[in-house]
Length: 521
Image (cartoon, rainbow, N blue to C red; front, side, top):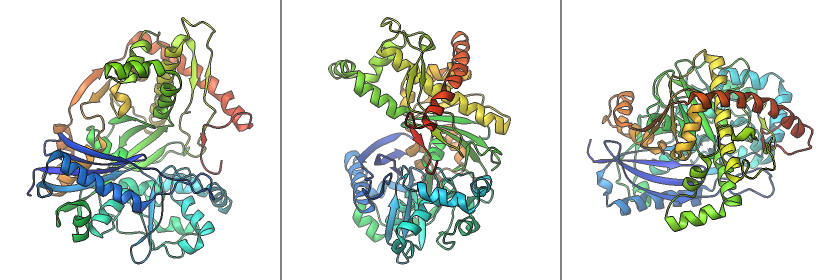
């Protein structure tokens, strides 16, 4: 192995970035470009992925991080990639991209209904094998293309994910890995590879599936064209990466059975490691392949906490934004300081955004605040702000209990990462609500670090990815539950659950709008 550094490409929902790490896991530099997924006005809910523009942005990031850090291309020992999950790219027989959509694409409601009419038990049967329902997977989207764009569907020869697409553009070699591939709903969890019978049962092509290789293995080298477009060295090893949450789990050291993490961003993901691909008889929680051999993950998602926080900040906290600009600090830090003085439980206020996950019947009532009084001393903008934090933690408690019902186990601690973990107040609320310790790692944006560690594994720098993660991942802060607050939150959880039921009924009755519902519901 030659080279002093490792590179990760992270293709997220809202941006792409190239990150360079040294071999001890220290971030040397990063270059990021925002990208947008545009709705086709002909198809409500669509979110097209512009592969031409977005590849140019990716190349710009790679060139940018090399220029910014002064690291030479010859010093990069290997590269791996990670991405938002569920987004898919389709290729024709010549290997040219012909259609792609982002993970937030929601155009296929009619096709979900069509699949359910094929067999009312089909979604349940596919879930028990694949860990996926029609809510996020590729099956309804592929059927949509067959129905709405038959001229495209007839040309489809291969399907891939965005992390695979990055490697493909750098090398011309396409292979899918289990951690992201399993989110399509076309994988058998236990065998960690494609199950072509699922496609056949849904009336779809069964010959469009590329090779599957496990995460952390060398799949190709940078081609001449890839080198010319990016500034990388021709012949540099390319290592198969994985899905963002799975690689994030590696990046925070959640690599063994019965360990768990919470990633707090636009969505909050609760990830729990298990040594089986067992699914839930109720089809209520998602199950994915981990990026580590012979480990799977139960995953439960809370919708939009990060976006709710951004909305609240921008709509109601202009003064805090102004003060933050003056003091060269984060507006959230000022908001946190004021919200810390609000009693646990926000004086009985009930905030409802995301519900606890029910994967096979997944919908969220209209956002609401309830049970507050017209008393500005007790109920002001910081009370409402804290209530949002508490609601997110209560949903996470619901997810912890959901997974516990399936597995019979709960983790001894939670590793908390992502943008939300920068808040000491939110971290303390989370540990108080869950009743177990919470640890915040030094590297909070851990997805790229997980990709870099896999790059090192692929070239033999790290013989054992588990040992490497244990050695390189460092904890910055630890939080322990406050027993008095924990008791308050146990009552708050019961009240919130009881209050959510009629809120959802209002949305079911079309009196209020769902915050979100899965296609076809």
